[in-house]
Structures are given as structure tokens and as C-alpha cells.
Image (cartoon, rainbow, N blue to C red):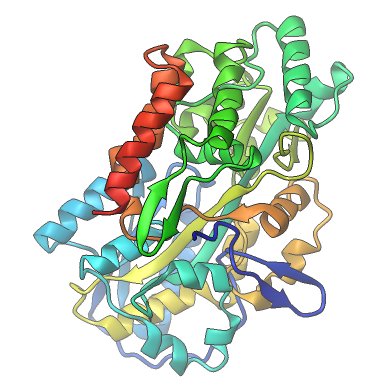
Length: 429
């Protein structure tokens, strides 16, 4: 059995929450002397607002506190996994890196990461303050290798000005998506009503789950992909049909990544898309004319309700090539707890990863925050929690399935059957 809805944690008396990460209450200050030392840190880029000033402030504070210098290198998400694999094989990993929640167990399994339990347990109250879902995703063989940093969830992002002009409301069912798309297609032929990005797997899974399907299930230690189940096929048929049947996408979108999707939205060419809680600020930053023209809504299930969405995020992990794990932990702690974690959450739109910092986000009435919070609480879901899911992502099993359907190379039945067979094999390696 595979639980895709993530474990929840209590947030005072107000709310509950699954996987998330990124901010927190203060922890006890460390006393590590790093004078004359330098740490290298890899941070992902490609979806976040520009965070250069934030990283500069963190680095300055860390040097002031410990005497150590920090070199932060931003690397593209699209290239990151291959770069990690190469650096692990060659022993050239950084001291610290942002690791996606689906990668941490994989890298721990490869023996590349330092366990963090000793450090976390030394900080009063920190273990209990971690958001459970993200801590679970950062745990391998009962040891914590990924310190929760932040989380985000994808929901529908749309052009409110276009919807208002055409008398449309945010979709509450799949039929509503089609109805809105048809109206936009007729009135604004220069816009893509709902592009289907072929190289973006996390765009796919909400439709699988929304139709009652699963990515994969586990029974007695054996994984079986369910992408070819009747329910999963129905969800994939609807999603790809937005392009192949309704013409809401474009041929070029067959090779799009999520960054391409957001670029097209920024340029004014897209009316609706699935996008992350962290992206509205980045969209407006890239095109200030979009201020006041962006809305968000939960992803609807086929007949209403909320379709689960991948509640992904990132850990900060310490690699075993570091010469000073204690010093590396001090930087991890600085980034993931206290004022810098809170500042990161506010600046980027990601959700915090410690319970003590979550209530404000969940109580928000901001129309670009509240729908994502609702999506996270009521529909945050996980991909299969196994180190081998990284191999599925590296192989781009799901992406290739969608691209084959969009390009007309395979029908849904054939593409899902082939993808399920490949995924099952990879998950059981």
C-alpha cells in the first residue's frame, strides 16, 4: 500500500498540514568557530524570484557569526540531478546543497549525505517543530538526511482580467476548465487557454489523482505503477485532451518545461496553467504589468472538490565530502529556522517547514496565498517515497509518456501501458 496523502501535523488549535518546508522559530545559537574556512553551497534556480540579495544577507550573517565565508552557486533545476550524480561519483560534491524531496533518499542511499539527527536533537524543541511530511521525505533508513527548508504546491494560476472580461469564474470542475478554455479560445485566439507542457511531470499527477488513479502502489515491498489503470488513463486522457481534442495548447508546448510555461504566461500568451505557490511573485517580478491580473484556484477534481497536487519542496543536506560537518550544520540551521527562514517564506511564496511558522500562512486571506494553502492542507500528495523514484525522474518516464501522446506517436492506452511497465521496473531495481 502506498500513502500519497501526506502525514499531517497539528498547528496549535487552528489547522493541520502535510508536507511543507521553510521557516521557523529560533533555535539555540551555535558556537562553531569557522574562522578562515569556506563552505560551498548549491541552491536551485529556475522557478524562484530573484534571491541574490537574500543569499548575500545570509552569507554576511553567517560570516559574522562564525567567521567562515560562504560561496553560494545557483544551478538550474533542469540540470541539477545529472550534476549531483556526476559530482557524487567523482567526490566533488559541495559542502551543502538544496536537495529536492524526491532526491534526498536517493543521495542518502548512495552514501553521499551526512545524517543530521544528532544536530537536530541538540536544538531544543526543533525535532518536534519540523513539519512531519517533509521530515519523513528527508528520512532514509530511520535517519534524517534532509533538513526541511521549504515546500510549495501547484494549483491553477489564471488571468483574472481575461476571466472578468469574458464573464468567467475560476473553474470548480473539469467541465468548467473546458468551458472557460473554449470561451477564451474563441475570444482571444492569440492566447493559449491551457497549455499542456510535455516535459513537466508534476503537471500530470493531479489529473491522475483527480480521476481516482495512482502513480504507483506498494505491496509487500514490491512496487507496481498504476499509470495504466482505468482511472489514471481517464485523468491522462483529460489532461492531454486539453491539447489534442480542444486545441488549448500548441505543438511547441510538447517539449516545454515548467519554466517555459511560466515564460509564456509572463509574456501574456497563457490564460490558465498549473503553477506553484512560489510563482506569482516571480511572474509579476518578470512582468510588472501582471500586477492585479493574476488569480489562483485549487485544482478541481473531475466533478468538484480538490484534486491532489504534488506537495514538493526542498531540504538542505550536508554532503559527506565536507571537511567540517559541524560548521555546515550551522549554515543549514541559519537558513531553515528563525528570521531567515521566515524572510525566505515571505519573499518567495513558499510555505514554511516548521510548525511554529505556519499559522500565519494558513490564515492568510491574500488571494494569491489562500488557494495554495487550501490546496496544501486538503490536497497535498506525495509521489512514491522510495530512493528509486529518482531513477524514474531521471529516465523521464512520465514526461516521455505525455510527449508520445501529444505528438500522436501513441494513444493513451499504449503510452500509459508502456510507461507503467518502465516505471514498475525502475521502482523495483
